[in-house]
Image 1: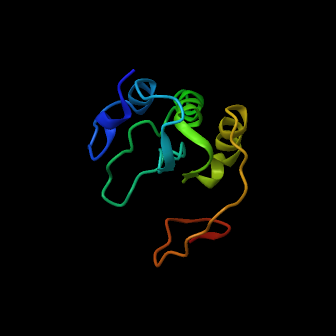
Image 2: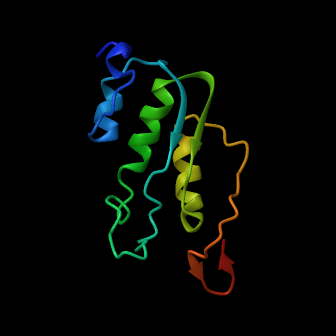
Length: 118
């Protein structure tokens, strides 16, 4: 386990689960994460999002997030609405208590179908 000071003011490139496993328990004040949405998303430029086609990382990642987050603190996670059930299960199985959904109104539409996603 590395001391928390070795993570402060650092850009860390690595597997998030492995990195968090090396962090002390209850050492993080807030988590804001924008993980792959698990929807097979292809952006306008055609690039792919690593990890967006498999969800085996979901439970381990949120398990570690819950472990490193200080008690009574906040985890904000973006997620793909079509996979809300997978994310909700990962959060709840790991101890998180979802309390709200925040919605951003965007200028462009990311998907069209029966409704338009904003």
